[in-house]
Length: 451
Image (cartoon, rainbow, N blue to C red):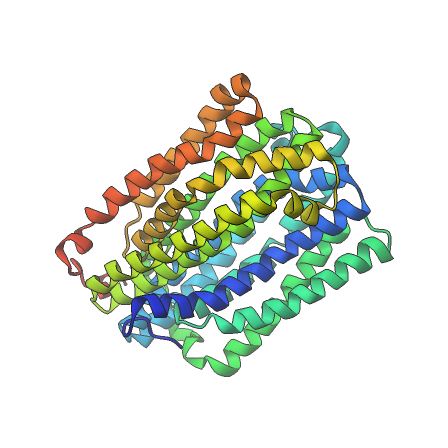
């Protein structure tokens, strides 16, 4: 377990983030392996099928990820406050609330899958493959949820190394199964989906075994499952805030994907490649944002508000250094990266991807503020400002779908995110500096009142 309440904020954030970053890289490699093997073996239509469903996947799976991360912020606060009893209560509540939510969303997503795909304007020539792939992913939602719960709990107490080790193992299994199912058994896109779920299940089993052997302090007893309306309400409010924040962003992406799908297969494939590269570029920013949330949560629980601000500033500086590297790489190597990820040599697809990244990446310096400040506000219990920023993002993407894209074509899509990021950064900066705890330099309510 790693306490983030003592020592240099910048060193603690870096040491906390590095294993988490490598873990996310390997988790992203799940999708990259699917993309490369599917594109190279099954062709552009199969790759477009995966790309056409990525927005729905982002909304639902992203919501579950945000939900568990929100739950774990309370675990981090009680860990910072050295309150083991209430910490175990939060773990028990995470299990109950998490799996109940996953069960409901699994049912709803499978029942309404066809309408969702039609709403996205999924082309007829890839509809069947898209439906097959995403249906399998959604059916295994509980597996993804279980891993998110385990990983978020471990992160809350400062352990980011263990999930990394297990993800490395499961990622290697995922690549092997991709090749076995698609190239060996001649499976279509369903092979990639099954490979992902099986490898995720392996990481879940490893995490559960490890927690039972090494972190008995986290295992809830019978008393921990005793229902508390205050705790359940506070946890779900925090979890929903973070989950809805991600979902609103994802819904905006769904709207954008519906617009993108109208432009045809080449644009879908190009956008899929661009987003895969963007995911890699943005991953460290997201990781440092999560580190800022856990750092803020532990120090908020310990009553060290000054350190909360120091952590936010440190995380912002780190992300700015990373963004400088990203812009350099994007301008120098985008064509190479597009081909590397997709295995496709289509010059038009590669050129569109290049234009997208050349427009977007210089605005990552603004995105850094959005990610770090939004996560830090979640860490100190602000549930409103992050959602307001996400609503702005949703509204901005909707405006692109109905106004910019019809007039400017795909170029309207390219410029949409930078414009939205600027507005979000302003809202979040104002929200951070006007937060009561941040402004007064002390916690305004006893943490135990939350239970």
